[in-house]
Length: 288
Image (cartoon, rainbow, N blue to C red; front, side):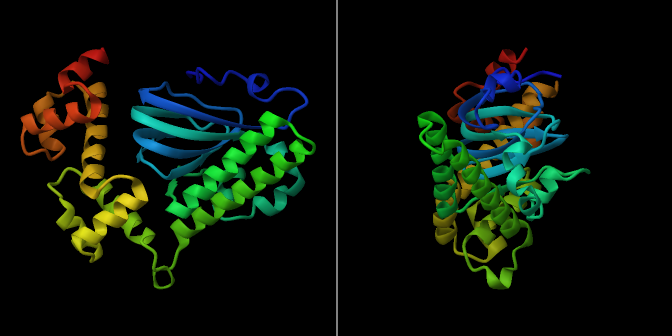
């Protein structure tokens, strides 16, 4: 198993005398090796997009996505394109003081209790993104300044961050449509639709019809939520899948283009180059 280049062991991140909590920000491009950790990790995607594999499940990550992983989960970032993220890393003893209460929360119980836990992501609304970054930056500041009571505050902030994750998880996977009138429910439905239909020739009008909104209103809300227009997200999703197939299969570029729903090979090549900065052929050669 490949270890993360920046995460070697507990002593490197969690220094003696400190609390077992670390906040890191990072940027990924290209492909990272499959690896696992001995600690828990909650990841927040601040910008960019990437394929992410965790325990055999592959998803596309985009701005505003958040997910959690347990010790021993095997994961990797693949075909990453300027993805910037926060890592909240911690050991279970950091929440020992209120472990029983936290581990009963929806989503969090799946994280801490034994048994299989399918990897899932959530997508945060704009206010939720601001709250996530605020909590993360506060933890970073406490660990940097080490003012009076900083260890206590780090543990309190981590507990707040875990509660925040549980609320978002519960809202996304257990929300009641009749009670939720925010634009978020439309975004979730469209992300699932795109994931299941990205090989088809879908445009903004098609997506608007799926959720019963006007194309203009959908575009405005989608861009507010994810940082991309619907058309840009579909294009980025297809290019991410293309990068994975160019790397891991020997299929011709034309066959990959056709299967991913591009109208022509020339269109696929132009869009690939505009997003990745090189042609599909150049990208494939660079993976050899």
